[in-house]
Length: 233
Image (cartoon, rainbow, N blue to C red; front, side, top):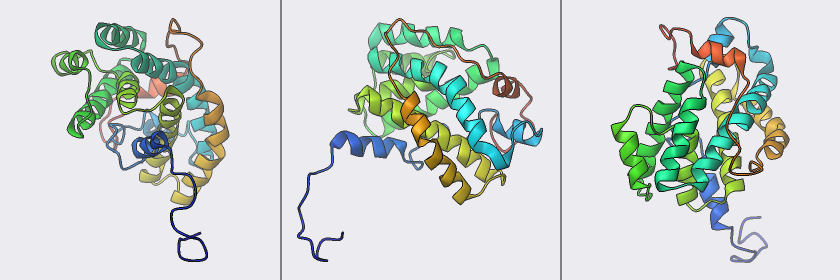
């Protein structure tokens, strides 16, 4: 209820700052680096291998097969590590990506997110930032995302929830911009996917867990030539 309409101003507990930070980084307006990518969805829609009328099922499969098994683990490592250990973890992630298209796009998206974090004044690990600037194989998106959300003050469960939500929103948004889904359908799908996201967004069992995904359709789509597409992939 609005203050002044029967309720005094200033009542109730103040929101947790971690919640506000999570909302900030999960906002679709935040330049996270993923806006230019469809992660293979554009190709799959064009070929009829993904159905614009049933994107919810396709996104759920991507969350289970790719995000939960790969991005979640890679992000947790980026969240946990710093300095030399962070660089070593990023190298493990680089070597774990089978599709070259996915590998290059992860680096591009990671560079964009890292640039945004530095531009808004976050204290990015200097060794990691230097490696991302100087090397073509450093700074993968989920690792950067984990590092950025850690230094922004989120705890790991919140960081994982932000990552899974933005992944689902990014795929839905790509379908809308391609004209294969509507804005209301997108919101209904995202709402329906929330229980799955809550279930998947749990920390890996230990720090020795390695990333590995199974998303063959989108992996193959990421290998296709990009000519004439709206998105980078």
